[in-house]
Amino acid sequence: MDVTQAMKQRKSIRNYLDKPVSRSDIEAVIRCAGLAPSAINLQPWEYVVTYGEEKDRLIRRLKKVHAMKAASCGPGTAEPLPEKVTNRSRNALKIMKPQIEKLNLPFNQFIEQGSCSFYGAPVGIIVLMDKLFPKLRYLDIGLSVSYLLLAAEEKGLSTCPIGLITEYGDDIKDVLNISEEKDVLLAIALGYADETAPENDVKPDREPLKEILTWYE
Ligand SMILES: Cc1cc2nc3c(=O)[nH]c(=O)nc-3n(C[C@H](O)[C@H](O)[C@H](O)COP(=O)(O)O)c2cc1C
Image (cartoon, rainbow, N blue to C red; front, side, top):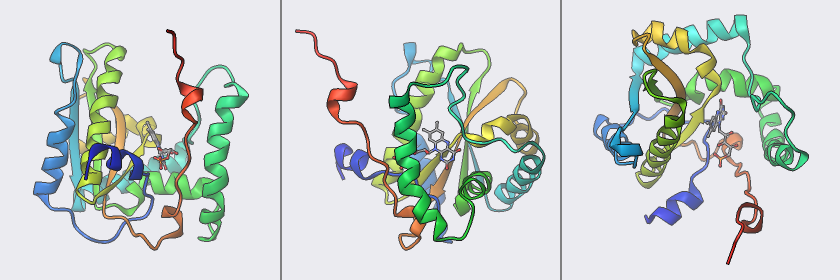
């Protein structure tokens, strides 16, 4: 599979088969994440893989803390976003909601519970960065995560980036014994997609080129 094909077909998957992912495949995907470029080659990313009983233990804690704190997916901005930007989100919801309704679950519950349980994926990845680095290095982390998502796609694996549970970074660090010196920036579900699940039959569209590109010549 070429890179363009992987980019075009990748989508976030929110229901996974009960099928294990081999350790060598997980390592190959993380190795690709480590190939990303970074400012002066600092490579500020760190990945923690949770699997089996350890992943289940983490999920139990996330569900417990979520029941108390109830973080939700929002833009996280202090100011309201322009209508044009908000519409991108609305359009994604418009195509997702009818699929989720087929599950007889309230939409928010599906996203929140699903995010806290890696949507049933066999692998839950936690993305860390040492607090020593300035926040600008989040850019490098984003690049590395993109490599990871595309490498997974090439292997026939699926993913869902999960930001919601970073609200519970301290709990994640506690369960996994991760140093206080690290920030939890993202989680990623990794596994084989259940292609028959209605919630996976969703592919939010993107803005046309003219909306994201300006030429000066
Ligand atoms: C940084 C980041 C955080 C995200 N957090 C969540 C999340 O907490 N829960 C979830 O279900 N999806 C989450 N997503 C997935 C987005 O909703 C998804 O990427 C977006 O709707 C575009 O859909 P696509 O990935 O299928 O192209 C996140 C994606 C990114 C990049």
